[in-house]
Image 1 (tube, rainbow, N blue to C red):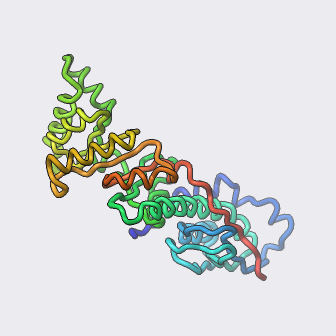
Image 2 (cartoon, rainbow, N blue to C red):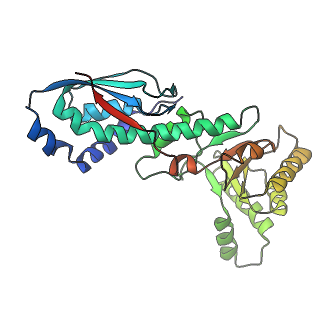
Image 3 (cartoon, rainbow, N blue to C red):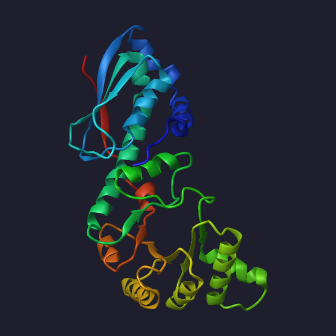
Length: 296
């Protein structure tokens, strides 16, 4: 699992601490002497997959470098209810000031990893890989995509500059630019050919809406074809068509997206598709409940 680098998340951590007024915690300053020291633990209040343990440690360090954190488990591990995730020692005012930011990030990322793990579990013994999308919170993309990896999923393109994905709106715009009655099937082939010519080393994927468009895309030979919101029967026909015409080794990757749930993901995976991309992994995953408790 590719690790999340501190430099990628530190600006967001600092912004979150400023947003929470962590340097001006009225309660701790009013109640606790400045030199109060404690030892505390972050616990999982419900079972799930850990992601962001190191992020939580970075939060405490970003606020007060004298705080000492130690991770009890690694990201990607299935947590039991009540299991210790992290311990932190040092100034009580600093620990309480950083607490909410650390828990917010840890719970959010672990929730993504937990949901991803369940999708992966339900597609076991199929060819389908579970992927995320670009439906991420601004500023949190690197961390959220890391959480998907912690849950056993894979990442789609990180940004618009990473790969070419020709969607239906691109095809509509291309037809307008050409000022002709160019059939959608032909426009798809023109779009793929142009993308491969302009960026020959880039991964090229194209979205199609019908089997006729799918056939046209096969002829254009992109790296992947996206079937968005297709019915199961049509997905099966597309997979059979690709394998019959090009063979399993030479056909492009077939990706499905749109309307994928825990209830239907297994049925989609068993059609023989290669990839299932799911926006809800990042935009709808419930936070995993975490809490901080003081030991001494």
